[in-house]
Length: 91
Image (cartoon, rainbow, N blue to C red; front, side):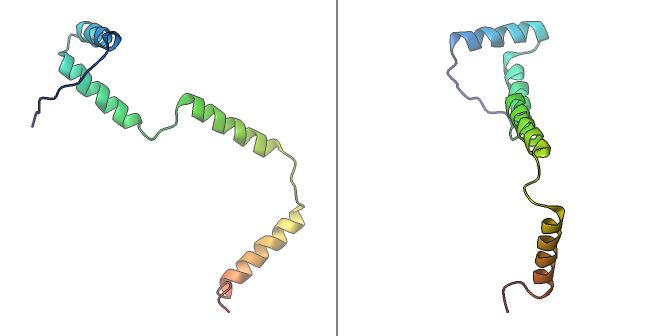
């Protein structure tokens, strides 16, 4: 099903649309459909800036010195496992 819709676009966007339509030898409506499909596919993904920022944070975390000894961590893990096996705090 195809529906006719009306959008208001600025001059620069219209020039880009016309240029893309001419270069790709496609109707403007087809260019818009493909652009929307591509945009939709990328929705929810990280932008390059966000990806780099998150990798930077991960790098800092993995190179930071540990704040607890491995013995302390092992004891906490054992306590959590013990609590799970006995029903946690529901005693």
